Image (cartoon, rainbow over all chains, first blue to last red; front, side):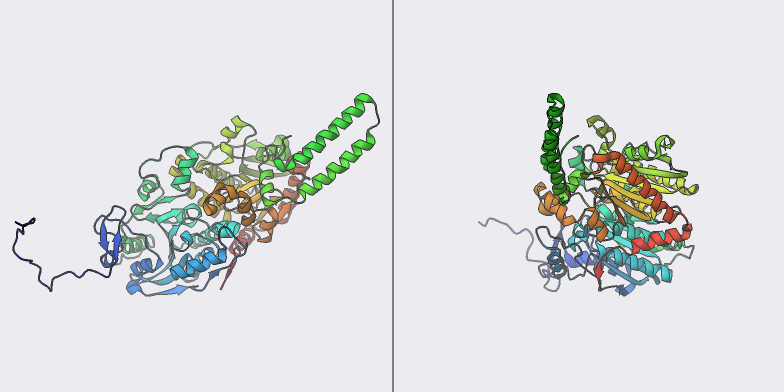
Length: 285
Length: 317
């Protein structure tokens, strides 16, 4: 007698219907759900199993926001220098080089202009994979220039934050990028050009203390970490246990620092809906 | 007077000098020669130590327990004319951020700055100079009020950072600082900023956007404290001296990279060694700086300020 008994006779899946095992590319969400990466991409990089919004970069956000993924990248060639000759366990230029090789990016932000639902939109999107999305001179300058493009051409600006904060290797110069980017946003505000801040997972430190919190609307995705001090620092400083959901986008919405949270698949619609409303234009389908 | 570890040779000589003088007075023996020799040695030791301070030693000086704090400056500079103002009109009055109106000569200024305590009790009361969001909002309220009446603003920076607390996060520490930076960028009156002690990160910049940003000789200004930098980049608290070095946080370095416009000299050994002299220097510097700004139209003032910050940063391409 066999150990197992086949209940139904034969294998019912025909060869044509047989699912191909993909090319070894699976994504595991924090709750442990396994998702096929192609399916993930089709679903705006949100796990269909549990709604988890996977951390993505500029490439994916541009794809989501710009019509047919068509856009013109701005100032693509700006690169960091090492003005302070910074060295910790590694020299800063070596860190930069390693990050560039790993990510194929020049620095932690990419800026672009393109059509979103048929109308121009400037998007500056940070890449967390590049030294933790940290803001140094290049990030500040690219965002400033993106804002300049908005000013000159009267095009709304959207900044997608995803950053651990200011880049330590450029020290005080990084800190000054908070002021530099805020100066530009002040000019944008004076010119009455809408600025949308999308805070994504994670948005902390100097980014939160500058452009991420200065949008005409500040919005976010579900479950993103947003804060000034990181949760570990808060816990260590205060000795208090942190409440559940502390510094999540839901927490910030509840405390009045976000206008709304949007699912990624609705992001493009929501952003353009806001722009149509605030600019008193007909709502695009 | 309290002494830092690297100041101990000075302490020893000062004690010897005092003893020598006492012996002279009590025994009526002529010790002039001995005393003057000790004085000479002391002067040499001071020069030796204070002229060659490492960045980490300057950080220690900036935190010296006898160093003057914001209210010491304001009260010394404005005397009885100073009127402290309180509250952010939303939540509470942040004791780590002080402000108010005062005169230097005939001119009224709005003074704003972080305040530290001078003993355990007042340190706690002042939250170690770490402001909460309501502190930054109080600062902004005072700045807007100054703007309304055409009063120039002077901010004094002395903070180990904005407070990283639970409630601070709930009330939007990041937003409060960001808002201040943006509003200071376009404030229609002159802003003079002086880093008098510690200038740590966003907590400092939250009141630190100015037409002229000045820095006391032994103050430090950077994106993070050397201790925290050490713990993040070296994953240990042990590398604070290297971190202080790497961060280029001293006044002369900050001037080199144009983060500050000028350095204010301190008495030999630090601001606390001759407080009156320090107050006088700061007061005259404020007057002089204001003289150069007061005739600019608000429009020119703001556009110059914006240009200054737009040009900050070093990159290629």
